[in-house]
Amino acid sequence: MKAFEHIIVETRGKVGVITLNRPKMLNALSFGVFGEIATAVDDLEANDSIGCIVLTGNEKAFAAGADIKEMQPKGFIEMFSNDFIAIRGDRVATCRKPTVAAVSGYALGGGCELAMMCDIIIASDTAKFGQPEITLGTIPGIGGTQRLTRAIGKSKAMDLCLTGRMMDAAEAERSGLVSRIVPSDKLMSEVMTIAEKIAEMSLPAAEMAKRAINRAFETPLSEGLQVERDLFRSTFALEDRLEGMAAFIEKRKPANKNR
Ligand code: CAA
Image (cartoon, protein in one colour):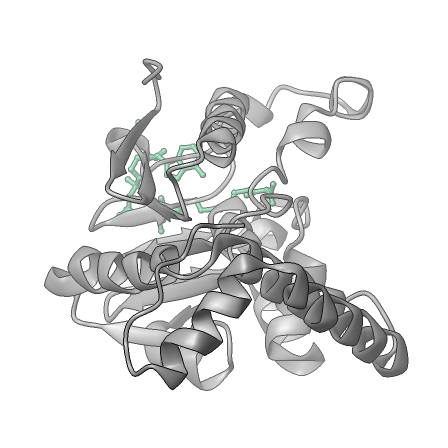
């Protein structure tokens, strides 16, 4: 496993865990952090034994946003011409394998955007989500205005992005941003149970389900349904599909081979 400066990367069975590790700065996302996350995703995606990737922070913060101290002196040309974040910053969103964000404490600005790049967000009861960029005289820059709006609708996204207020875990769950809330001391154990369950599934089937759901954000319904149908039919080329249905009929657990 590579040594990283700002993150910790572990494999726990079939699950890869990326932990943001800049606690003194509430896991502020510098260019370096984004780069390390992207490299870790590259590695875990290429690792055949990994079936699900978990992204997490610490109890106080998932991540309190992009690194304001790093950004403050930058000008337009630097942000535009060396737009590293645009090139590698959304690597989590382009990951083929299923991803789960385990969020405790602050998920603000780029932190909220990073969580939203994951397929599932599990929040601890202490989680706080927000896009406070407006209070800094800027706006969300890695998906906040787009993914948040798709997740929770226009009025609430406007409310958060225009006032900069935070929403707690209960409001985030009510709004559809997070799929489950768990007690903070059980966050990682609950998330690992979910991630392990996903990692036990046929990986190509999981990747196809993920791809089909993500198309729902990009295409009209009729095209999305066509993509789904094509991918559904494609699963009939999988040994895992044959095995999965045989195992059901024979009342046993399937032995997935990820092919
Ligand atoms: N960037 C850089 N440093 C940060 C940071 C950030 N996003 N968030 C917190 N820190 C630092 C603080 O400066 C502080 O450092 P010092 O001890 O050196 O002063 C340390 O982390 C602890 O933070 P606080 O003392 O502020 O902790 P708190 O508990 O009083 O407050 C907080 C917590 C409400 C989250 C507050 O830290 C805060 O408002 N942070 C900034 C949130 C924010 O505006 N995020 C958006 C960033 S812009 C962005 O993300 C753009 C984009 O879309 C790409």
